[in-house]
Image (cartoon, rainbow, N blue to C red; front, top):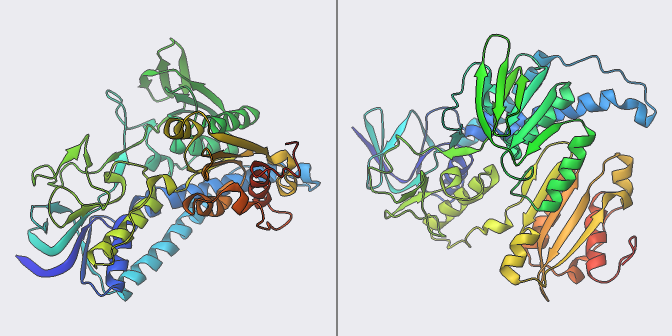
Amino acid sequence: MTDAEADLVILGGGSGGYAAAFRAAELGLSVTLIEKDKLGGTCLHRGCIPTKALLHAAEVADSARDGDQFGVKTVFEGVDIGGVHKYKDTVVTRLYKGLQGLAKAHKINYVEGTGTFVGGTTVEVDGTRYTGKNVLLATGSYSKTLPGLDLGGRVIASEDALNLDYVPEKVVVLGGGVIGVEFASVWASFGAEVTIVEALPRLVPAEDEFASKQLERAFRRRKINYKTGVKFTGAKQDDNGVSVTLESGETLEADLLLVAVGRGPNTAGHGYDEAGITMERGFVRTDERLRTSLPNVYAVGDIVPGLQLAHRGFQQGVFVAEEIAGLNPAPVDEDGIPRVTYSHPEVASVGLTEAQAKERYGAEVTTFTYDLAGNGKSQILKTSGAVKLVKAPDGPVVGLHLVGDRVGELIGEAQLIYNWEAFPEDVAPLIHAHPTQSEALGEAHLALAGKPLHVHG
């Protein structure tokens, strides 16, 4: 059986898939959207949204515990994990209903079921074939593990961690990237003893080294243990706990082992290889216009090599819809995509690290770091951290790196500075409201422009 041809058939209803569907419909194209689970994908149901709800609950726990710092008598009596899940699930449900309503309003032909790409511009679902003038592959990612380390029991992935019905007393987190440090932060706020194991030399190794050092310092103050530059060698579990062994010979005992070693592209079993699409280590190769090796077949999101971020997939989905509609959109600049780790404190960045900038522009790269100790709002919030700028020789600001509570909310201005190729002299005259943390960005640019007002230049 073959369904009527649409302008665009989309395999996967996560951030990239639904963004493409909604934008294409707005542009007058007919759309078939195929999703095996729930509209919204990993980000809404098993990733960004529920984890950030947990992180906010953790912030409330810290506020209750630390009220005396602000002269407020509060008592932390513990975590009602059922109540936390109710709050988290309410947020997810409300957003999910909103997405479903938008899909209906855009008159998307929504198909529930597991789709297989069968070549050409056709996707098959349960014996029915859906052919489009164009096909978009957006099947997302899954939680990876390590060879010989099976998930199950006391060895869990992030999806399982989101639904735990208790707060563990002791946890080992395998992986010090974004997912690992966010869950470590949550559990520490909830009262657990946490140890992170990271094979690379520092936490959040994809970030600027400055950001890693700031986060590690903050985690030491919070008594979150971490072991960097050490490899995991094995884990054994029984009814009482899990025993984790390291290459150093050390053994760590815990209630749970969270495996947070990254996410792999969800491409196996979808027919991509068999149809002749060029692949690389399981990822779908595309050009800068997100075209695969087959005509009229595009790919977006976590299955395309690069940052695995919901907002990257979303913007790529919009790009493909506009490309198909003939609007000739500008390609997405991967370096211009903002990145935020929502731990306590937060780490936010856009553009190049200092090391990347030196590799691209040479040793004459200029940097400036502004300590949040000089920022009034940060002192009110009792958060420490800093803003670091990276500037190209005789050129614009090419990297902005921020560490501190709530700095994720500053990344909007930071990404405008990077994407508009602003010079420090362009930003320095802009007025930042007082007292806000955004003043830290202003002060850093003032200093780089040769006008250091609240720092010694």
